[in-house]
Image 1 (tube, rainbow, N blue to C red):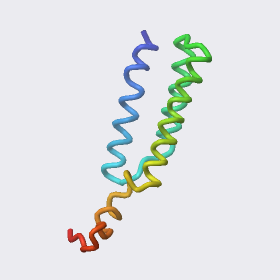
Image 2 (tube, one colour; image 1 turned 60 degrees about the vertical axis):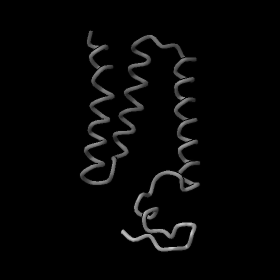
Image 3 (cartoon, one colour; image 1 turned 120 degrees about the vertical axis):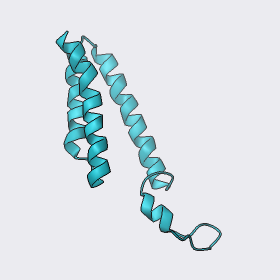
Image 4 (cartoon, rainbow, N blue to C red; image 1 turned 180 degrees about the horizontal axis):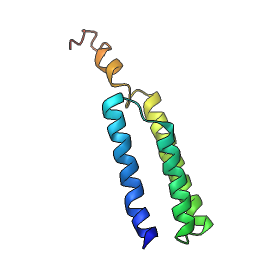
Amino acid sequence: MILDLARLLLFPALMAFAAASDLFTMTISNRVSLALAAGFLVLALASGMDGYQVLMHIAAGATVLVVAFGCFAMGWVGGAMPRWLRLPRSGSALLI
């Protein structure tokens, strides 16, 4: 019962905190990411997930992280203000 309650509340609560923090301060603390990772490991092991499944979840997360870094490096996502202020490919200035 307690494990189910933790499973249902931990992720949404941390994501809501991260969203509110990002909305008001435009920063998300690294502690939130660490709490999510630690919460996953604790809940995965407490719920009886075997080592292979845990490693596959970690591999999926690492894959998403690498793809997200690649998209950021290519300028496809992230850094909204520089994207709005830079010159478009046509060479004309973008006015805000």
